[in-house]
Length: 149
Image (tube, rainbow, N blue to C red; front, side, top):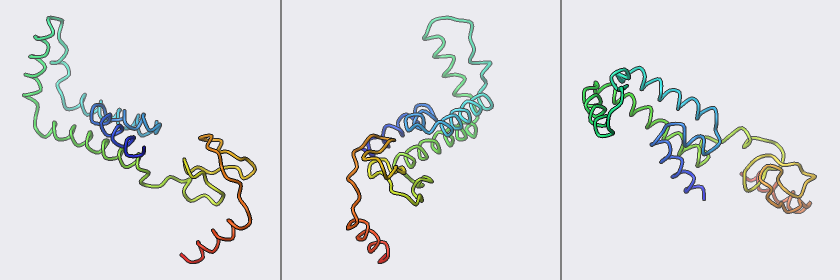
């Protein structure tokens, strides 16, 4: 399921930078990449030439293509770089790289979502996954495993 989220986040980020991060519910990064993309469009593309006073769809499309053909290649590369960085970042975030701050928590974590759980509950209050109760034997086995590594 993780690879499906990564593919969906990557495709959405290709269409609109920040949309893949919104799918992953990483709101700050979504706003950052969407804002960076729209600022780059506004800064590098002649937006005033794209604003037409109407006409048919084919006329507007041909005018847009003419304007896009006359844009500096360096400006196009800058916008493509923003899209590429947003896409790769969304894919890496979907796979869990870099690990979030929850990965270094001291308490027990949920095997499904990786967030810290309350030891008194039998389920994860973040994703509602049922948890197996911790026993003394499993605690000792985990302690030995961490001591070996």
